[in-house]
Image (tube, rainbow, N blue to C red; front, top):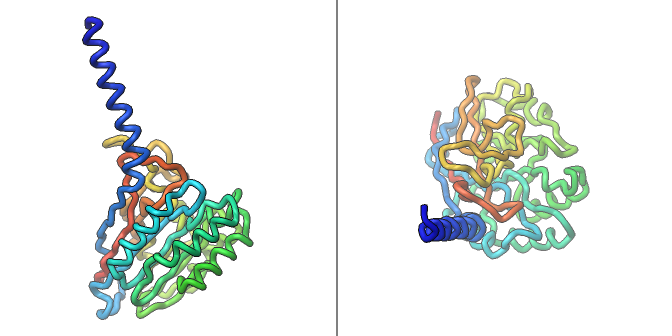
Length: 279
């Protein structure tokens, strides 16, 4: 290769690298996808067939969030008029009390379900080292005041659909056995669990329904046709999307609305809309 060709190809490669970097920084982190997923639920009341359950996960309100993006995303989500809404943790990336003010403001635009709205907490909702129980209590209080019921190792029946909420695996209030001990197999049930690694623990008490999670962000960056190189879970199978289990459980991992670092490649942010159908 002569010098002229070398310089030309080097320029093309440099331009491609620059464009890719700009895309991963300024485009894909804000290119929200609404993903539609059928959700067959055992014992679903006939009146709930065709109803929708919206999952929003990992909003990550914080110093590095772009609140205008989060606000417009939540407004778009509300326009779908979901019947149920489930928030699966990591409302904030906490650095200072200002994040609680941001949460107050953004909740004004957050969608509520026509039949019910519920939530669980994630590891970031427990602050530094996932140990700040007082911060988690404050966030839960803010959500409750905003008509979002927070399930902390407990269950609640809404309009014939039972939600079980498991508190975060890395936090100080992780009690999955307590959450699952009173599961009634005769009720249509969906479990909310922030960290999908809980799927591998012996805590499920025979449960054979849906579990919806977040936490991984899909890895945020994923080479084409290859798994994401970085995932904050022990089981690297748990990246994103739907995963079936031999015991009848079905896991869905949401790719997150927000981010802790503003970078995404081949892993667009997601809000999931499940359509309830009888199993």
